[in-house]
Image (tube, rainbow, N blue to C red; front, side):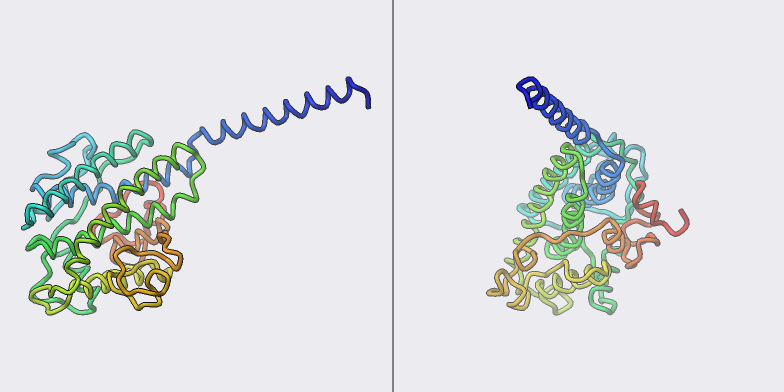
Length: 304
């Protein structure tokens, strides 16, 4: 091969390489339909968290704080100001405003949808606790009655969204999508860690009037979420058998994780099974009386 032939070959290879790299940039820079769906779906959980935290801490929800983000969706039912001490109220209010930012960030990236109808009533949370214990608690569990009850109710929600983000991340193609989910996951996991830490400090306290410890409540809630999700162990309470603790050496479990202390992931289908309270993604209920919104959630609906 002569000099000119070698130079031509190198030039052709360089052009091909540059074309391939350009193609990667174009593909990676374009938002795919799959990415849009996976970014849109978490709005359901972010709406729930925003209104639950804002109303619980201040008595006023998204319609007062950032009505444009509700996008004309119906106001939530049943939420009310919780009986909280100064520290916990301050933390929960911070969480509420953080969720406002999450909603804005997602809706600035994808079109999204209006807030679905949310059931934040004490009856909705009471039913979760009844299912967790396999019997009706008496008096019915009221998440707004006191600080421990509210923290236990808070334990129910953010972790589900956290596992949803962990599950979605590997499915994303676009760098903008991945960056957004990483940012959302960082704060959601922080919220869950704070809630678990506050509860861990109270783990041996008895939840009145049920005669059951805080730790047992968390274990029951986590077991229920695993049962509803139907995909094995992806949830852990504050106290676990030592073999399930970090490195199999400790029963305290302030953060949930697998054998390598990595966060568990869930699919949208699993998330819906849990937040609907039915173990079936086809039938709305629980915190979403009319169902979650977005293409993914609607695609599972029994009568879509």
